[in-house]
Image (cartoon, rainbow, N blue to C red; front, side, top):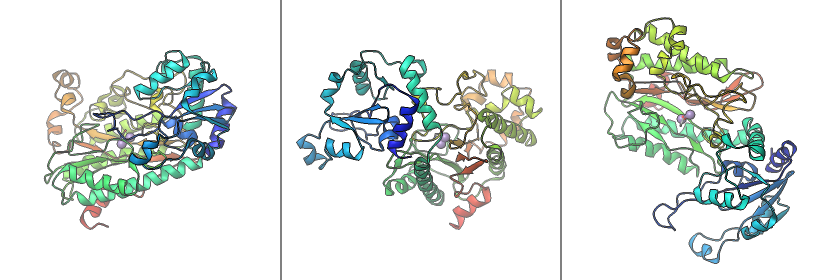
Length: 452
Ligand code: GLY
Ligand code: MN
Ligand code: MN
């Protein structure tokens, strides 16, 4: 769909006036040194323009722009920028005004979604003369708007898919470079630098802070200073974002010097089996929670085969024993946001009437809906040895019956393994958008050792 068609569709589903703010970049340490600006995803969806400090008003498919012409000094410091009128023409706007006009247009009844940055959020509350709770706690028109936008953004149109495919391709290139760099790299930072370099060279950005680490058990690891030694595994979770803001989310785990140890390979192959089995089951109407439970079952069964767990896989999953090693959900929605629409809490991820479980094995499941054609989700099972979980005396006692701790100790060189791909749900099944990046252990080793 074009942006006009997206606006038209929203107008058919939601009949009131909508105001969407793009937001603004916060300052880092002094006012002129800003964090990179990235417009709100809802704004991007209807404009395809990374326009700072802008507001759009949507009425039955018509767009009115509120935006200030750049000040003359901008030409000196940032270069010439397009005028409001030029942007309005590009957006096919029916009218365009400076921001100072907004308060005079009687818009307190308009529906909106709160943006993330505080300064703009306060402007929203001020203009609408009401508090704006998080969307999952909102009511009335704001809640109805959130639901309409979710319906639109859940299933991607062709233009969106073309963008996600581009993001996926650049991520694949970045990962190939990362895997090939690992053999000679001295530090995690060098591998990360090589991977992000590929993304930046495409004039894309990273869709989220890169995780490139030998401490793969730290799920959202934030540091990259460790040196790399033979025997380490690198978990690299790095995804590109296109210029229009569409994301990809990709993880591979590879051995620093090009060969998995036998214990690493056994666990790697098990995680891959879970990954492949989940993807085989995907298709329209399939419950995503069932895919998650499928990953849990395959992992539990494999850990029994390896002698790490004892018992029947079904029983182990029912008791959340698998979650000792796989403590997160099997994936999430992907789109303009890497965890798409999580600014709306669980409104997007959970079907109406469903709520998060507080069970250890389900509480981090971010998506619990039937799959539908056009959705893109990640499939990312993993195995992690998190000391905080596994060394807790209470945990050891509680799971004593099911875990062979002595056997587990033999797998000490496996800290964290995750294999993550981006999967499109089609009319008949699914398509792995990141399939061109190998997953098989032998293929990963070949890529490292021969570059093939
Ligand atoms: N890159 C974060 C995640 O996989 O959810
Ligand atoms: Mn992910
Ligand atoms: Mn990821």
